[in-house]
Length: 460
Ligand code: TRP
Image (cartoon, rainbow, N blue to C red; front, side, top):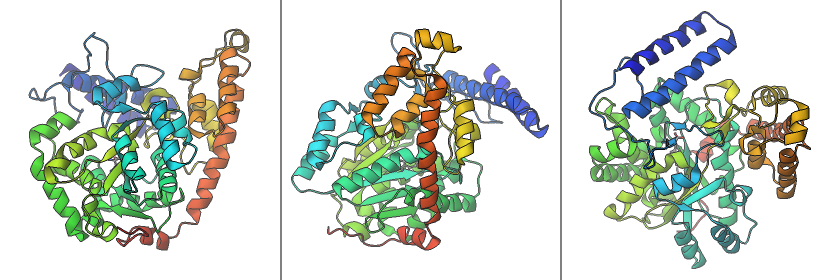
């Protein structure tokens, strides 16, 4: 209760600072404290803070203490937080979630089966965890096809580079395996969770679709859909939603997602809607009524709760379990303690940023693992493991040798923070400019094509 009151007061403070158009630094500091209090609140009560709703005594506390008493990272679809500057401990997460590590053996196998050099996200452990990927590859080797499913919650018009990670990787998977892809835009989810109108959410879905299409997907192999549109037009999709709804209890979703008695019923039943695209019978126009085509879902690890639930239900309603590939989070410019937020302009590089904004943001806001003075840095070297500019380069620089050399030079002190940041700026600027060019060429007509239910160029 004490935390609840502190949080309410801090929320008021942020609002009054904003209305008073206070100094940006003061507003930022107040927001940081607010966020921290929210994390603390969730830890203590097991509930998300909601203005006007004091903590209810009934919810089970999400136990964030591991057996040896150490603090555990928070990772669920709505919160990502850790106390470590290196970011979330992903190996521990694999144990906690019960998934499997993508080890060198699996990367080698993907290379062998696909006949392509593994994507840098695989080479560098950015996609680090999986469920049943070996089974997908076994089947593929026996000429059994599969399909890809990924998605995005369209909570605003503004997408940042982190949002592209799953799509860049999905595009690669589609190219090397030559398989159908469905992309779910959960405008319904964002309406239920955020203070937005249905119209806004739907509009954001169409805007976000343009950024997704700009990643280079082939319209003959890809179906993008808004839940608000597709749910009402596809009896087969809705039937699968209802099947899932019948086989998951309120107790189960409470346990998986931490819903409480005061969450609206839309939220409580939403997970069934995110589960349905993992079943091929939800898309009869693509799979000709087949219900046994295996699904592979590339996603960030925070989406895993949805698919743990999906995998649990699948055999009970006569469907194969979807396989999964999980990625790490893209760190905020301020450091790897949390993922980026679309609502804080300085926490990320947006797809709409100009070359100048990119330069300023990296120089001003990218958390540095370097030393305070040049002399110290030359003598002791920097720490790439906590350096955000270096982390970003591991996501976007293609050349492994060049990246390794940067790591060594930074660690030894030969390479200074300013020089490292310059390399990142020079990597990001052409990348974002190219994306903007591609997006400009995406017409409303193309969006409509991608979003129209239709057969794709595959024979099932
Ligand atoms: N819930 C996801 C989000 O808020 C969107 C989503 C729906 C998704 N289906 C998915 C993400 C499948 C990854 C894979 O962003």
